Image (cartoon, rainbow, N blue to C red; front, side, top):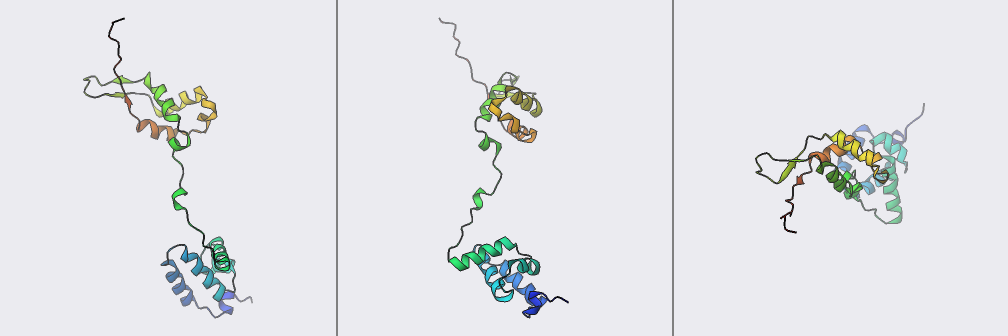
Length: 166
């Protein structure tokens, strides 16, 4: 019968649970280094065993071991860990949507506001964008992205400067 590395080194299930709870309370990036130290001392420096025993990501443990070995701590850039908004990916798209919707807009019947209203659906705007073929940008659009943009976009009606004097 095969003996696990944890059993071979005398690590009990209670110890495993206690170490897991303590390491979870340490903030990053010190947590990676703590994981690496525990793995080195108790599990013979085997990140795969740490993954099985503690449930830690072995790549995280490996990174912590490399940080300990080199003395260089990796910086977490959490601000870039998100999906870009459609407006950020395609900055010109908002102007394109405005140009498509401008012809379909109508003013408030009581003229109480300068906002324009439209009955154009998000899928119709998407189809219009695809029909324009906006240099290949529109083919990557999803209906949800366009729907979000169209529901959060207002078109201002600007009065024309036609005075009749010529």
